[in-house]
Length: 575
Image (tube, rainbow, N blue to C red; front, side, top):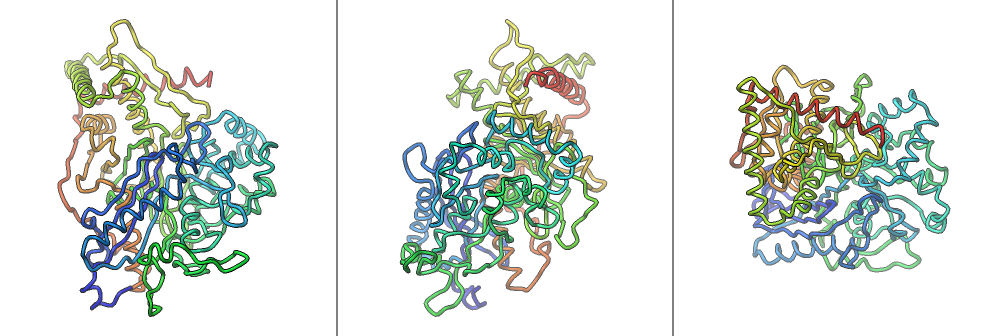
């Protein structure tokens, strides 16, 4: 880190990379004071690229435009560095941090190169082959051992996690030629860091490892029982682990020469990105490269949700509800019970993230818009107004004491179900359509369908996590909720909780990465072990609140909840 005099002269910058399922984002953040971060002179790059395939969950190492995924990530960094260099400001890049869609794994060969798209895994998998593997595995180990695994890893047996995907991959005879090439599994962020550092392989952070469903979140080691269920060949391909902020050997910074090859070869990134070198020309520390973090954890931090009184609700392509809880490895609460239907992932050595996720959130509305020919923004806005009018009519009936059943009910499982039922093979179902149903009835049911599943997670969280005597508050993020005030109000009405939208927290995931990196650097500088003193809830702009319109809305949403649960129970028999 810089001395006090140097910091006065130079602006400290943190680069963040946010790899999502539909885009790659790189942004620059300036460190203000010890740990506060703000966007730096609008230096950012967004590349709209689909990174995962639906159903198979394979990572698209070659994008739909024919480019290499790793090169697209590199290109986003090139864009931001170009903007910084042309800002005419005296800066020093002190760290680079990653947020990654989770879970994700990529198999690498002995030279650190991806084996191929078929040797990749992600959370987006909902294939019938992997779903069948889940059922076989559950039958093999029995309910008692299945529950023990859940309490160790914080993840159920489901096709969105690595255990059934790896078992299905290694047992597939058509994959034998690829399997023979595998040396180690890496995450997308770790594979990038290895390339930049000039080394063939790297560690994987506790955070990203936890999202695979194979990490014991209480000990931060690969769970022995879970790993024992993997094919023996796969067990030898598991990567080493570390915290996201650890500096591991070889050096945590960029190297001028590649290592691990038959001959010493120059690292092309040394000259391409001199700002990201680990040391300056005098050997002084310069830029730290941090290991990846789960995007959900970063979204929480970036939304100022770092205590149990704030539940983060995010709707992008997918959707999630999460709460951050202090839980150190050394003093891990053995008595903490992960509520069935939720997950518990490790963030770092000191904290875990408890919550639930939906594979389909904003994607349900995008699908409905395409189906109803509402791609035009004006048409969509007009239909939303019609939805709001219908909802207000229903509320008026409740106020008059004549609540009616929902006209249309939707189980919003376009890509299978994660929380809370974790039913492989689940699909979207609609009930209640009649000759009189309009586009507004259908869109309203889709919006409500997602809200009701989020509320199911919220109810489990409030029962299973210590939140104190006060009611928690929902803090929302994600483009779908940021743009849709009606959806935010529906969430408040359904949950009975106040909903807060911070206008200054757009791109909360990137902001969360920058905050995690800044806090880590500040703790290192101050030789501190307590991150709580660095996380200060400081408002930087306007917050918009949506309060539940109780009591008139209670009966409406109680009926809607019952209708959806009845629908799911009925159709789940054929999933």
